[in-house]
Length: 385
Image: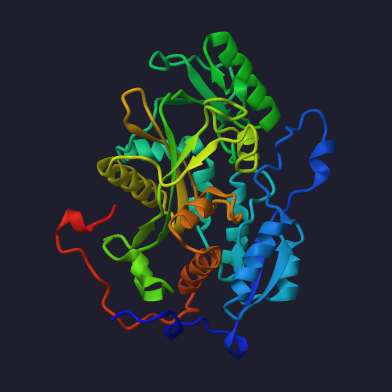
């Protein structure tokens, strides 16, 4: 029998750990960054209230916490604070693969941390590379093309309308009402705008007209050995727990039909905000299909512990992978992953501690239960992917 929560504890000084929460915090600096800097440059950053919520959740388990701003002083702050472990939600400070910067630093310093490691964070932020990997794995993606300098010839298979966004950003950055283009003139104008202002390639893809969903998962192959909630993972051969699928109803948002940065920044229920329907109204077979895609999308880029995958239906009603977030937002009552957990009846504290425990177990900070993991006995019906 798999043990209870009380049978498994993190180990540290005096029986508790010092956990540093690493994050980049929003500020008003974006208003004075200059004409050539996009106004949504800090859209991925967190509010201090999110950091406070994460710290409060961790402290319920008896640990001490400290917040460290993930800026250029981070290496020196880590040296001074000497945390036992880091809870990482840092977005990085620009440049190539910015979300991989903090994990790379922590790997070099051999400091345990939560969430995706260096490679997965680097790949997932590069949407073009992610789509190439998925395509090579025969996963469904819409036709796409990357524009690096802006004068590339549009491939014949790329039919209008098309959707254009920065190739290496998140949180809907660079996505507004002009992201959908209907002719070559609009396409070239948008591509040049993104390359100029975001200093990176533009990703052009077929615009998918169907319903949009996002699905979060947590866990890995040995989740039950270390989880505070081992029952979450029963029946899944890969050791994942799939949260209820969330549908994003964007027709009534400030950018109808688009889950843009402006729409994402609206409070739930606020005028111009999209609808958040969780669980989504889908047939069981489609739920299973979408969950399978989320797991395969996560595994193909070497994701670990948790992620959130965005999916949209094509003209035929078939799901296509849009992108994956290996560092999904964790703002209680607001971020998609938190809304999915809440819809399932999972408390925010339990979600945060689960992420903490899974991360700690990778670094030997958590003893494994002496149990034999449940395995699938050849029946797909028992496998909830």
